[in-house]
Picture 1 (tube, rainbow, N blue to C red):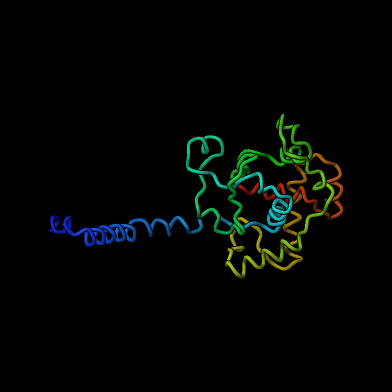
Picture 2 (picture 1 turned 180 degrees about the vertical axis):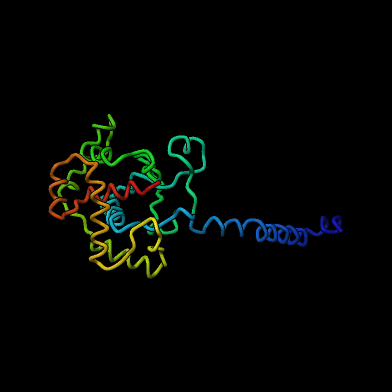
Length: 221
Protein backbone atom coordinates (compact mmCIF):
# COMPACT_ATOMS: atom_id res chain seq x y z
CA UNK A 1 0.00 0.00 0.00
CA UNK A 2 2.73 2.46 0.98
CA UNK A 3 4.71 1.72 -2.17
CA UNK A 4 1.57 2.49 -4.19
CA UNK A 5 1.20 5.83 -2.42
CA UNK A 6 4.84 6.66 -3.09
CA UNK A 7 4.24 6.14 -6.80
CA UNK A 8 1.13 8.41 -6.78
CA UNK A 9 2.15 11.85 -5.48
CA UNK A 10 -1.38 13.24 -5.60
CA UNK A 11 -2.88 10.54 -3.40
CA UNK A 12 0.19 10.65 -1.17
CA UNK A 13 -0.36 14.37 -0.63
CA UNK A 14 -4.06 13.80 0.07
CA UNK A 15 -3.17 11.09 2.59
CA UNK A 16 -0.68 13.35 4.38
CA UNK A 17 -3.27 16.14 4.49
CA UNK A 18 -5.88 13.81 6.01
CA UNK A 19 -3.45 12.59 8.69
CA UNK A 20 -2.38 16.14 9.63
CA UNK A 21 -5.98 17.39 9.61
CA UNK A 22 -7.06 14.55 11.88
CA UNK A 23 -4.18 15.24 14.26
CA UNK A 24 -5.16 18.90 14.33
CA UNK A 25 -8.77 18.13 15.12
CA UNK A 26 -7.92 15.61 17.84
CA UNK A 27 -4.95 17.35 19.47
CA UNK A 28 -4.60 20.99 18.52
CA UNK A 29 -8.13 22.38 18.33
CA UNK A 30 -9.38 21.19 21.75
CA UNK A 31 -6.29 22.61 23.46
CA UNK A 32 -6.58 25.85 21.51
CA UNK A 33 -10.22 26.22 22.51
CA UNK A 34 -9.32 25.52 26.13
CA UNK A 35 -6.59 28.16 26.14
CA UNK A 36 -8.96 30.70 24.59
CA UNK A 37 -11.48 30.35 27.42
CA UNK A 38 -11.37 32.92 30.22
CA UNK A 39 -9.03 31.92 33.02
CA UNK A 40 -10.56 31.41 36.44
CA UNK A 41 -8.58 34.43 37.60
CA UNK A 42 -9.71 36.65 34.71
CA UNK A 43 -12.22 39.35 35.55
CA UNK A 44 -13.54 42.47 33.84
CA UNK A 45 -12.15 45.89 34.67
CA UNK A 46 -13.93 47.93 37.32
CA UNK A 47 -15.45 51.24 36.25
CA UNK A 48 -12.47 53.15 37.69
CA UNK A 49 -10.02 50.85 35.90
CA UNK A 50 -11.94 51.29 32.63
CA UNK A 51 -11.68 55.06 33.05
CA UNK A 52 -7.94 54.61 33.52
CA UNK A 53 -7.66 52.42 30.45
CA UNK A 54 -9.41 55.09 28.39
CA UNK A 55 -6.87 57.65 29.65
CA UNK A 56 -4.06 55.22 28.83
CA UNK A 57 -5.27 55.00 25.22
CA UNK A 58 -6.17 58.69 24.96
CA UNK A 59 -2.65 59.74 25.92
CA UNK A 60 -1.04 57.22 23.58
CA UNK A 61 0.64 55.04 26.19
CA UNK A 62 -0.01 52.02 23.97
CA UNK A 63 2.15 53.50 21.19
CA UNK A 64 5.28 52.95 23.30
CA UNK A 65 4.30 50.10 25.61
CA UNK A 66 3.14 46.61 24.68
CA UNK A 67 0.88 44.41 26.79
CA UNK A 68 1.92 40.98 25.56
CA UNK A 69 4.77 39.00 27.09
CA UNK A 70 6.17 36.47 24.64
CA UNK A 71 7.21 32.95 25.74
CA UNK A 72 10.96 33.61 25.67
CA UNK A 73 13.31 33.44 28.65
CA UNK A 74 14.53 36.99 28.06
CA UNK A 75 10.90 38.15 28.33
CA UNK A 76 9.79 36.09 31.29
CA UNK A 77 12.95 36.91 33.27
CA UNK A 78 12.17 40.60 32.94
CA UNK A 79 8.38 40.79 32.90
CA UNK A 80 7.12 37.57 34.49
CA UNK A 81 4.93 34.74 33.20
CA UNK A 82 4.24 34.92 29.46
CA UNK A 83 0.78 36.04 28.38
CA UNK A 84 -2.04 33.52 27.89
CA UNK A 85 -4.99 34.21 25.60
CA UNK A 86 -7.55 33.49 28.33
CA UNK A 87 -6.22 36.45 30.33
CA UNK A 88 -7.54 38.86 27.71
CA UNK A 89 -11.12 37.51 27.70
CA UNK A 90 -12.61 40.75 29.05
CA UNK A 91 -9.98 43.12 27.65
CA UNK A 92 -11.50 45.07 24.75
CA UNK A 93 -9.81 46.49 22.83
CA UNK A 94 -6.68 44.44 23.33
CA UNK A 95 -3.56 46.57 23.64
CA UNK A 96 -0.99 43.94 22.70
CA UNK A 97 1.16 46.19 20.52
CA UNK A 98 4.40 45.44 18.71
CA UNK A 99 6.63 48.42 19.53
CA UNK A 100 8.52 48.80 22.77
CA UNK A 101 9.96 52.23 23.25
CA UNK A 102 9.24 51.50 26.90
CA UNK A 103 8.86 48.18 28.74
CA UNK A 104 5.93 45.81 28.45
CA UNK A 105 3.26 46.62 31.05
CA UNK A 106 1.03 43.54 31.07
CA UNK A 107 2.17 42.51 34.59
CA UNK A 108 3.27 45.91 35.87
CA UNK A 109 0.79 45.63 38.75
CA UNK A 110 2.95 42.88 40.23
CA UNK A 111 6.04 44.99 40.75
CA UNK A 112 5.11 48.69 40.80
CA UNK A 113 3.19 50.56 43.47
CA UNK A 114 0.74 53.46 43.37
CA UNK A 115 3.26 55.96 44.73
CA UNK A 116 5.84 54.76 42.18
CA UNK A 117 3.38 55.44 39.35
CA UNK A 118 2.59 58.84 40.86
CA UNK A 119 6.25 59.87 40.84
CA UNK A 120 6.87 58.32 37.43
CA UNK A 121 3.98 60.12 35.72
CA UNK A 122 4.87 63.43 37.34
CA UNK A 123 8.63 63.23 36.68
CA UNK A 124 9.81 60.05 34.90
CA UNK A 125 13.52 60.69 35.45
CA UNK A 126 13.02 60.86 39.23
CA UNK A 127 12.51 57.09 39.30
CA UNK A 128 14.02 56.02 35.96
CA UNK A 129 17.22 58.02 35.34
CA UNK A 130 17.70 58.75 31.65
CA UNK A 131 14.07 58.04 30.80
CA UNK A 132 12.83 59.63 27.56
CA UNK A 133 9.18 59.42 28.59
CA UNK A 134 7.50 62.82 28.90
CA UNK A 135 5.87 63.96 32.12
CA UNK A 136 2.06 63.71 32.25
CA UNK A 137 1.36 66.47 34.76
CA UNK A 138 -1.99 67.29 33.15
CA UNK A 139 -3.34 64.03 34.60
CA UNK A 140 -2.91 65.54 38.06
CA UNK A 141 -5.20 68.45 37.17
CA UNK A 142 -7.94 66.96 34.99
CA UNK A 143 -10.94 65.03 36.33
CA UNK A 144 -11.43 61.46 35.13
CA UNK A 145 -14.48 60.68 32.98
CA UNK A 146 -16.22 58.15 35.20
CA UNK A 147 -19.65 58.37 33.53
CA UNK A 148 -18.31 57.25 30.14
CA UNK A 149 -16.49 54.36 31.80
CA UNK A 150 -19.72 53.36 33.56
CA UNK A 151 -21.60 53.33 30.25
CA UNK A 152 -18.80 51.24 28.74
CA UNK A 153 -18.97 48.74 31.61
CA UNK A 154 -22.73 48.34 31.08
CA UNK A 155 -22.08 47.66 27.39
CA UNK A 156 -19.36 45.11 28.12
CA UNK A 157 -21.68 43.37 30.57
CA UNK A 158 -24.63 43.26 28.17
CA UNK A 159 -22.90 42.55 24.86
CA UNK A 160 -19.99 40.36 25.99
CA UNK A 161 -21.63 38.91 29.11
CA UNK A 162 -18.80 40.10 31.32
CA UNK A 163 -19.28 38.66 34.84
CA UNK A 164 -19.65 41.78 36.96
CA UNK A 165 -21.21 39.58 39.66
CA UNK A 166 -17.90 38.02 40.73
CA UNK A 167 -17.58 37.95 44.54
CA UNK A 168 -14.16 39.65 44.70
CA UNK A 169 -15.07 42.78 42.73
CA UNK A 170 -17.68 45.58 42.90
CA UNK A 171 -21.01 44.66 41.34
CA UNK A 172 -22.28 46.83 38.50
CA UNK A 173 -25.43 48.39 39.88
CA UNK A 174 -27.11 51.75 39.44
CA UNK A 175 -25.08 54.89 38.80
CA UNK A 176 -25.48 55.93 42.45
CA UNK A 177 -24.32 52.53 43.74
CA UNK A 178 -21.41 52.44 41.29
CA UNK A 179 -20.27 55.92 42.34
CA UNK A 180 -19.84 54.67 45.90
CA UNK A 181 -17.74 51.70 44.71
CA UNK A 182 -15.62 53.94 42.50
CA UNK A 183 -14.97 56.36 45.37
CA UNK A 184 -14.03 53.49 47.67
CA UNK A 185 -11.57 52.07 45.12
CA UNK A 186 -10.13 55.51 44.34
CA UNK A 187 -9.79 56.28 48.05
CA UNK A 188 -7.41 53.36 48.59
CA UNK A 189 -5.16 54.70 45.82
CA UNK A 190 -5.30 58.31 46.99
CA UNK A 191 -4.27 57.20 50.48
CA UNK A 192 -1.04 55.84 48.96
CA UNK A 193 -0.29 59.06 47.07
CA UNK A 194 1.57 62.14 48.30
CA UNK A 195 0.20 64.90 46.08
CA UNK A 196 -1.85 67.18 48.33
CA UNK A 197 -3.89 68.61 45.45
CA UNK A 198 -5.03 65.11 44.55
CA UNK A 199 -6.07 64.50 48.14
CA UNK A 200 -7.94 67.82 48.35
CA UNK A 201 -9.74 67.18 45.08
CA UNK A 202 -10.75 63.71 46.25
CA UNK A 203 -12.01 65.11 49.54
CA UNK A 204 -14.32 67.29 47.44
CA UNK A 205 -15.56 64.27 45.50
CA UNK A 206 -13.37 64.69 42.40
CA UNK A 207 -11.27 61.86 41.02
CA UNK A 208 -8.33 63.05 38.93
CA UNK A 209 -7.12 61.19 35.84
CA UNK A 210 -3.90 60.06 37.50
CA UNK A 211 -5.90 58.11 40.11
CA UNK A 212 -7.90 56.27 37.42
CA UNK A 213 -4.73 55.54 35.43
CA UNK A 214 -3.01 54.10 38.48
CA UNK A 215 -6.06 51.92 39.17
CA UNK A 216 -5.76 50.55 35.65
CA UNK A 217 -2.00 49.95 35.85
CA UNK A 218 -2.39 48.23 39.24
CA UNK A 219 -4.91 45.83 37.67
CA UNK A 220 -2.39 44.55 35.11
CA UNK A 221 -1.13 41.40 36.81
